[in-house]
Image (cartoon, rainbow, N blue to C red):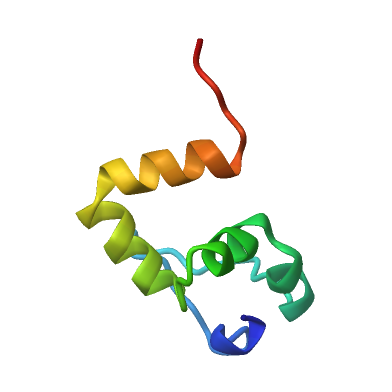
Length: 72
């Protein structure tokens, strides 16, 4: 998945500030978010944002199961 993230391009945040830290390809490869996305066949962050906001019930259930959070 690390090949899908351009870690060398300059980035800016939507709130107008420059991003001061970017994860290395190694960080991205080992990230829990990357593992979560792979588990659910999500190819990139844009797809994750689209799916998580269009189907909040799916996303909530998927995150709770992935993190093994249980309610009694």
